[in-house]
Image (cartoon, rainbow, N blue to C red; front, side, top):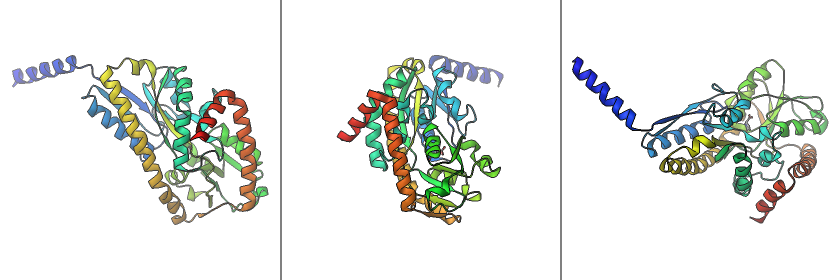
Length: 322
Ligand code: PCA
């Protein structure tokens, strides 16, 4: 018995020793049950398979390894090898990161894909300068406004405490006379329950993930933009992979991008039905509120183009040329 056991141990040591098996940590900010996270898990499983077990990616959902705001830096520094982040929340480093959140520039899944492709060369370059390799991105459904009261006119928004997820959403709030505070989705429920905020702009997906009907009553389907979660890898970690494993990762990333986008599109309507099914009043914004949002969007588009200069212009020109 003893001999058999030690022979088995010796054999497995040999096998492990022979392979260059590597494990990567993948911090993510959103819940394990969210489609972005499920999609990344499928990506991780596929990478394990196509690399013949040489690369294992371990998902850490819900900000459990690094909080949303820390993920990008952790991957840049190699504290995690790969991660997913709402890149637009890093527009303070480079406004190009907010290309997906320019109000009313791309408001459908199709347009969002076109914009992604138009931005990809610029975005990859900006990320590479930060020691990151762009892998894939998946959109959230179109963004709508949530409130804890009916909002029929722009005046109804004045003074309302607003949960922002990046500087863009904070700016929308500010221009509408609301009071923004930046809060990660993982902390949203508590912020709503304690009255720190009572409104936000987000998708039906996050509204359902966080059962926001417990604290808010109205959802206005504004379709302001489709922000993206972007998956990137530490450049040194990626460059250090054998070529066949690199190809496996990039091939599976392409598939994950397509699969995740299809998932988002197929789930979008159901999320809004779930909000309504749980008692929220769901519908389009009034004309007065729409007009105000379009005005705000105009201001913000001009600001974004000014801050990004040639890079922003190149993205918008490439998008419009499609
Ligand atoms: N959900 C994320 C970002 C955009 C979205 O729809 C959030 O609210 O944090």
